[in-house]
Amino acid sequence: MAVVTLEHISKRYEGAGEPAVDDVSLTIGNGEFMVLLGPSGCGKSTTLRMIAGLEAISSGMLAIDGKSMNRVAAKDRDIAMVFQSYALYPHMNVRDNLAFGLRRRGLPRAEIDGRVAAAAQTLGLSPLLSRKPHALSGGQRQRVALGRAIVRHPKVFLFDEPLSNLDAGLRVSMRHELIKLHQRLAATMIYVTHDQVEAMTMGTRICIMQAGRVVQIGAPLDIYRHPVNTFVAGFLGNPPMNLLPATLGTTGERVSMRVGTTSLPLSAALATAARDGGGRPVIVGIRPEDIDEHRGNNDAAAMISADVVTVEPLGAETLLTLRLPGIDSEIVARVGRTSMARVGERIDLKLDLHSLHLFDSETGNVLDAAGK
Image 1 (cartoon, one colour):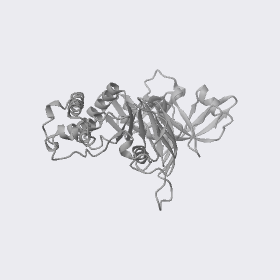
Image 2: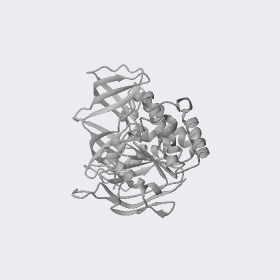
Image 3: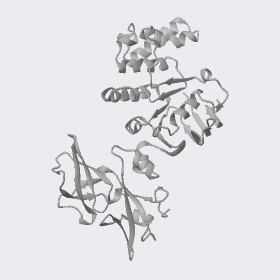
Image 4: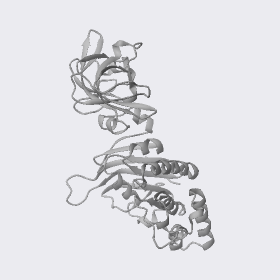
């Protein structure tokens, strides 16, 4: 396996006003599952293609195990890539699709047969080796594409949104297969997706990108709990974090904030971050799961009223879309499956004050303990 290092990597296309990838620095550890996450056009696939050698690097340095790859041809980088399209040879059966690349490299027949058999066993393809792609389901075709990468025994696996063409059920199944595959192979894997559920469930670490730049890198739950700005807060999570305009206020030593027509206290940690901020506009963030219905036995100081716009019972939970007095934007609350809320009624909500996030209203950056 391998360590992949990107140092100030950029990609500029001729005639483009802005770089597609701008000064990206990132280290993927040996055996790590790194997910490049972001919306369409953020530069994640371009970054992956530069690692693969399919795109020239405009500036910066790419290294694998300390060896510069900038001028190394794609075929010599010892990398296997799985694309969104399966790219299988339709006239070949599964066995020949798996073996094709190995035959091109001139490996002995016995070694080819051994690698194909091992990959087929790992991916549950052994009963399908004589079938051609048209006789396979979408999930089976995707497993063949994975197997074609596995048989090469590469230093690095690259995945470019490999599950995008699958239906919802197959996506979940294949996600589990990839997680188990990484555990079995202990391989270095770099995975590109715009699906934050895939990123949260599969990645050892996540690298979130926006407009060609790295915004935040960290373990999935660390980023989820501690987003560095409103972009990350609003992108990661399903439903995403609620972001609302608010105004800080101070009364003596007490720091509070006004959200719409409601005044709420701040936890000690947020009060420290917001000190000397009286009258300052901020953005307050709270996850849907940190909002619950008030049942008459909670701290009234952490309550806020809202009008129910929609109710989505999902079985295990219920999603409520709500409108707060004095605020045009809506929020989402993830409440219990026994919720009796009805569209059009006003209900009281309990907020977990320790789970609130404050962001600067101008820069969108999180306010730290120094209020910056």
